[in-house]
Image (tube, helix red, strand yellow):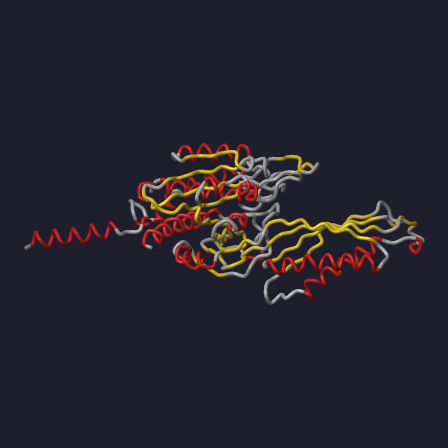
Length: 434
């Protein structure tokens, strides 16, 4: 009788193990595995932080990533979108192919942070000498995805599907006259080469507490479009403005009218929108009213319909304000990054995976932009933020992204590694159980 009971007990345990989630197989849980690889993740981050490269120029960064992925035994493709690196991990069991993305480029910013691995690199950008810095945390994105790649490759035999590790260049924008980034990867056939079913991406946040994950269903980051307005008047002496048509005065009226589009003509209870003029250029000296003036700015929207309406409103305002002052104006609106949209169903399904990776908060949309949006237009996507702010620093005191004093608490990367791995394994489990 005792022997029979033991046999039955063994059978129950064996059945339980066969149904066990991949996330719990092996000798370590996902949290333990992320802790085990954490020192390496920090080391990688510091290497990339000390050696940043600008968009479409990430040559050494790409070589380091390629070497690492090949060392994991992954199939590697290089040269996509100039300097992109793709690692392909084929799981031991059939299942979905999941995309995980990290951006790899730095910024033309001179670092002021006093850390041993601070960037000392300099370069020429748009004709000016400048430092180069990972002032937006892309170095941590690389390191976190490398950590996730190590953990998942060690579970290769148990994986119920495949993983495409996407190390994407030029998220900050390709240099003038060049193509790059996620849009070029799509154009060059990323989703034709790999049957990616869903794609996950994350961004470290210097203003969010370490250990915290922030998400939003639907549009989480804005579409970003650029406009350039040329106002043509009539040059004259500064002492006789009535003899000419002053494009500077027209520019001032036009800037105020553009702000009215958002404050008085846009349904802001639906979604946020921003129109900002970032550059105004006119004239050569104080006593000459110039012939022309130029306004350059950005448009941020979170809804496609609102985006189209605001573009129409801008064109109308530019034309009518110019005519009101007997000037002429031309406007060029360049479509940039689309809205970064989190698929509602995918976000709902994967929320438990985020919750077991960190403290999760739902947030309002952000008017910054991200070219992960091009990937999320191809397949359902989920994009979220991972905290990188030290707990003893107030949010108001944290240096913003894209600034010389940008600083991150490296302990936040462990949360990001866990999130990428949990999302991957849990999605595979869900597909296997359907």
